[in-house]
Image (cartoon, rainbow, N blue to C red; front, side):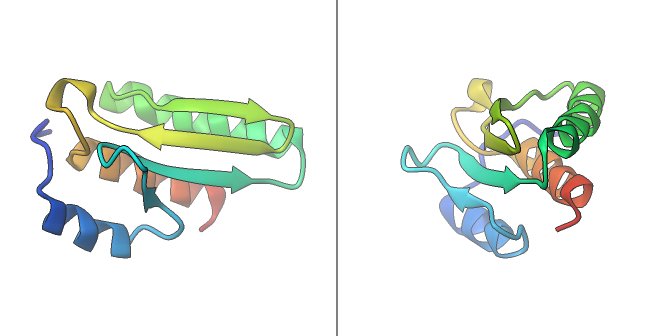
Length: 98
């Protein structure tokens, strides 16, 4: 999968189809907060997401506090958001049921 940074117009268009994902203030990453019913659901989401990330060889920056998972995606070697980030974001939305 290509690791080329998306241009701003392509990124803006892509974000329209990714519910609840936003461009981060740094302009070089996308972010989303997932809130679940409890810790077990949050951890199950992270487990499914981790397996997808490993398959893509593309890993998120994330944190978990109880039922909340904050995710930031960026392709560091490309200096911004790539198709890999969009693919992982879409998978995460699927795992969260959104």
